[in-house]
Each structure stands twice: as C-alpha cells, then as structure tokens.
Image (cartoon, rainbow, N blue to C red; front, top):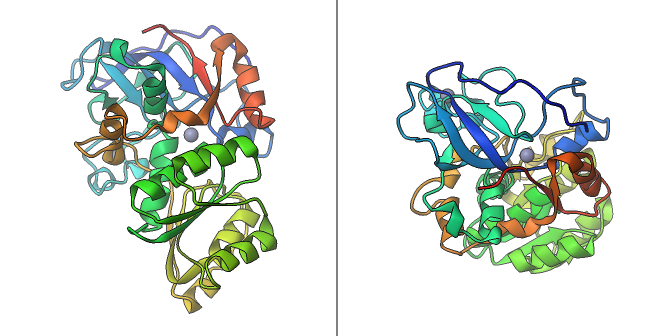
Amino acid sequence: MEVHEVPMPEIRKPGDVIVRVIKACVCGSDLWWFRGIGQRQHGSLTGHEALGVVERIGDDVHTLQEGDFVIVPFTHCCGECAACKAGFESNCFNAEPGGNAGYQAEYMRVYSADTSLVKVPADPHELSDETIASLLTVADVMCTGYHAATCARVQPGGTAVVFGDGGVGLCGVLSAKLQGAERIIAMSRYEDRQQVARAFGATDIVPERGDEAVSRVMELTDGIGADSVLECVGTEQSTLSALAVARPGGFIGRVGVPHTTNIDVNNLFWRNVTLSGGPASVTPYANGKNGLVAKILNGDINPGMIFTADFDLDHVQDAYEAMDERRAIKSMISIGAL
Ligand SMILES: [Zn+2]
Ligand SMILES: [Zn+2]
C-alpha cells in the first residue's frame, strides 16, 4: 500500500457530494487482492467503507447539507431503478463502473448522494469513540452480516451457525442474535475473535474446520443441522461446510465473496435447503426507526468492538498487514478530525 497525492475529487454531476473522510477501514474482502489471490489494477484507489462530513454539495442535492455527518456505504443507490426500489441497491442499474473509488483518502466523491449516503441523526461531537466505531461498521460489515442473517431467515428461537470470524462473520453473530436466534454456533479458532463472538451472542464456539467442523455442528444440533446457516467467508471449504450443516428445509445466507469454482447444489434439492444471498444493501438496513443506525445510537448494539487496531493514513500498509497477519480483527484508519 502506498499513499500518493492525487487531484482533489470534484462534483461531476448535480447529485454529487464531496465527503471529507473522518474514518475509513480495511475490509476482509480487501485481503483477497492484498494477498495476491484476487486481481487489482496497480495504482488504483482503495477502500469502500467510510464515515465523514459533507464538504460540498451539487446543485441537485436536497436532503444533505454541508457539515452533515454521514456514513458512506460500499453500495450506491440511485433510488429510482427497479433494483433499488426492490431494496437491492447493490444491484443498482445506474451504478457507475468502479463505484465511489477511494474511501481510504482525505476526500471522496459520492454520486446520487441523497439516496446513497446514510445521514447520522446526531451531533458527531457528542458521540463516543465506541459509537463512532460502530457507525463505521454500517458502511459494509454490519449490513453484510445482517444480510446474511436475513437471507438465512433467522427466526426467534432458532439455531444459527456462522462461518467466518472476521468483521462480517462477527456481525453475522450479532445479527442472528438481533433477529432472535436462541442458539448461535460460531466457527472460530482465534481467542480474540471467540471473545467478541461470545459478547455478540454466540452460545457455542467450534474451532474445527472442514469435515470435522461439519461433524461437530451436527453433533451440537442432535444430528439435525441448523435452521439458519450464515456463510461469511467465501472459500470452497467454508461454502461446502455451510451447505452441509443446514437442516432439511433450512436456509443458507451467503455473503462471503465467492472464491469457489464448482459447487454442487443438487444435494440441496434433496434436503429442501434454500441457498440465498449476495452483496448486501446498506440503506434499507441502516435507516429508519428500527434500523441499525438507530440501534447503535440507542446503545442497543456495539458492533464497533470488531475494530481492534487504529492507524493513520501514513500507516495504511500496517493496517492491511495487521489484518492479514490476524493481529487485528479489523483495522480502522483515522484520517480527518471532526
Ligand atoms: Zn467491505
Ligand atoms: Zn438504482
């Protein structure tokens, strides 16, 4: 990772705003290309999760003002197309190729800002560091974990199994709890992550992987399997294990970016198991009276616990390395002052 001076982003369309970034972070999905497993163009701008203050607004921006405190989601929402109207803004038909590149920066451009940004209804100067960290998770991981639980149709009193103990997996545990799961089995082999999983509502921890993990979950569920399975990793092993532990008629919510080739889903047919999921949408989960932002501001949830290290922009390489080497669950990058 290298820090370069680049031209200041500009308002290009009337619906654009320029956000001055206060906090950004590194995502587990960034590690795929950081490790060289995924491809990324050399010299491209990075980051897709941020919190900031609106610095400038275009002529056709109506719900935001300069100075507003906002969450910048990894998704874009035009608010008008069939996908956005159906609540699937991550599939927006009017998304620009490349999206809002460069959240790990001092300033960034956001288009269709009225509908894409999540305005925080609070004075940021009065919020604790913990609350600010929690709001940052709404840009991606908390909504992605919540999407996994929603797609896995977690029901009150049900059993949920969560594959993945990174930011998304841990937020998946918290979301399963929020949606009423009584028993939550978290797959994790790292002490620090197990602790957060328990704090978020995990009742059982399974450190095994692969076939052993499957046997262990089947044992814990009396040979039945889980009502809901949250797949928050995306590797072949994790996906295959997730498919194997859903009970007959169960639901799998898949949000780990797939790094698999051939997954045979025919055996799901014989067990009446539903496989659902994909990239999450942020604004439908974040906004509203019972949305995730309200829950954070009320102190009901504290997903910001997943940030266990904080860096400045000059140490962005360290921020990635800390996650790559599992010294940090998730790295925050503190960029601007409020
Ligand atoms: Zn992300
Ligand atoms: Zn759209």
